[in-house]
Image 1 (cartoon, rainbow, N blue to C red):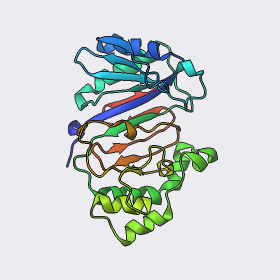
Image 2: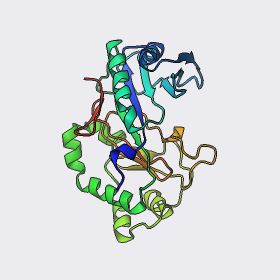
Image 3: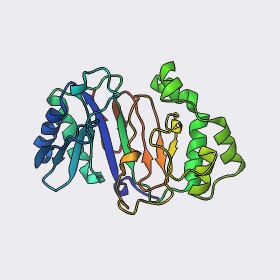
Length: 258
């Protein structure tokens, strides 16, 4: 069994009330290094913090944060981190908050988790468990009807029937069961992203150019409703969003803004 100490993570933390440069400068106070305005693609207007270890922290725009003016919407995108990096990550969150950043009801936190030991059977079982508990998840996290209709739809019962009738043995089979046909390169904003859990975005093999990295199209923007996002391409990604916070008792991982 994989332990928490062996897992690699990447996080995305959505904030408001500070400019992207101000968020980047707050990160630099913790990690050292330099801040650079990259600026492209313009829709993200990214700032890059290259820390003292050479790791890159990006601060990008997020159009879903409609509670703040565009210049004060910032999403922190971490490099790949290990268990030992969590204390520094917590210090970054504290520094950004001290600088004035906040997160309203439209902000969220994403946690991307490595996946070397994930199997098609495990993902199918996860889907079935979430499907069975959907109403409890909706109630516990206070998901609005508007979110349910757009960003956080209930799982498709036809998909659940397919995986129950024919448990997937390969990721290709699970991909086909999710989409209704094999889809090697799904569109980034395919409508199947917007289900309560798991929204499965499939590329059956790792990218040759980025074999062990968190690839950009696995980033999940938009909506503060609860989601799980899983991919067959390492790394396997889980997204849990609960009003800008994530806390798992006993793990040492506690992030977000109150």
